[in-house]
Length: 229
Image (tube, helix red, strand yellow):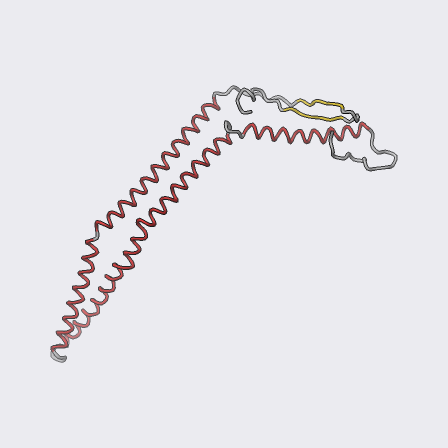
């Protein structure tokens, strides 16, 4: 029987509510509860492993695997390519930039003193020339060392492309498996016999206290035969 109090049940006046009114109110309450149970059963039937819910879980797990592969790719690229490139920029390239800046300053100093030849001591002009040659040699040597490391730089670049290739191959393999799974589910769903909906049956039972109770039973044709229960 329904535990929800019916309207007027608390009145102590001339009408506490007739049995018929009480039975009607209990019927409304129990039918409402039964409708919720019916909806819950329908959701449970539709979103089992053989239904769309199982396919949704499969796709979600596959996308999670792709995300994990992407995280692994990010770690490999960071440690194998980005960090060595940043170190190269902060060490060798910075040193070359410093040497070129110093070389340009000494070249300007030598040109200035060369145009004033005869007005400045010869040893000062020679000293400016020697400094210019020393800076030129250091700059050339730094650039030569950088160019000699082309094997390491090309190796890091090849490792980057290899990591990208592995990631896309793994993602392709994962998504290809999910695609095959969904195609199989789609074929199985297309070949299922047509289901016909039948309204649920409402049965009435009379309890010892003369109250009337209602209970419902879900009725979907071919639901049991589809293997969803």
